[in-house]
Image (tube, rainbow, N blue to C red; front, side):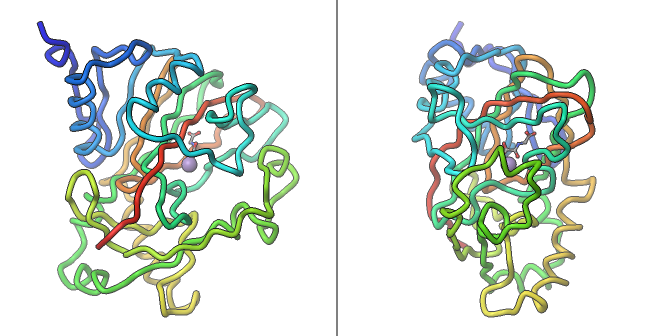
Length: 282
Ligand code: OGA
Ligand code: MN
């Protein structure tokens, strides 16, 4: 039986995500298996895999079967694997990485395609990740607001999050690097046509978007806030519970994510590889 017949893709929720069964990411994937995963990735925005337990080498190999790895300059890499970033919270630390709605790298002119996150050490409970689907969120807006948004572009920046001007407590500063290099600013359409799915998607996020192009920060805030509360509402989100060996592979252009910080006094360690993306258009 061809391998693809054994791969099961089960939607995780109405708006975002799918659980994929019947694939071993640690072994080289056949062209037909990769094709099945590519279609599922475009359709669902984030894929969840169970019981994988990838080594850094296998993680890198899977990432490279998909595209080109991009090294995030702010995260500490895993020893001996500069392509793999650590997403870590120690038991004595209070702030986690990614603890608010965001999508990675929107401050780049060619934002990263997405990330492959592997669970390494999990708290006994808690530490789930929320995902939100930006095509479903866009499609649910009124025709009038869609029309208004279609003419808008937004500014994104890394400065206020990773830069020297960031209001960063010491608790997290140790886990991030290169604040001086947080000088990326970009402008993207507020509604993009997704490069893989061809669906329109809302492309602003609470983490990195600073305002609409040509508008002040103050003028931008009310409409951005409206879009944020709309897109993060229950109808468009899914909560992923990590188990040992779980892997999540998300598309930054189709989804947001939010790492829940509900495991005080416990360690959580994830390995992340980020893939190169492309310029986005309306
Ligand atoms: C990230 C991130 C989410 C998590 O790695 O970009 O936001 O659940 N992580 O750790
Ligand atoms: Mn993130």
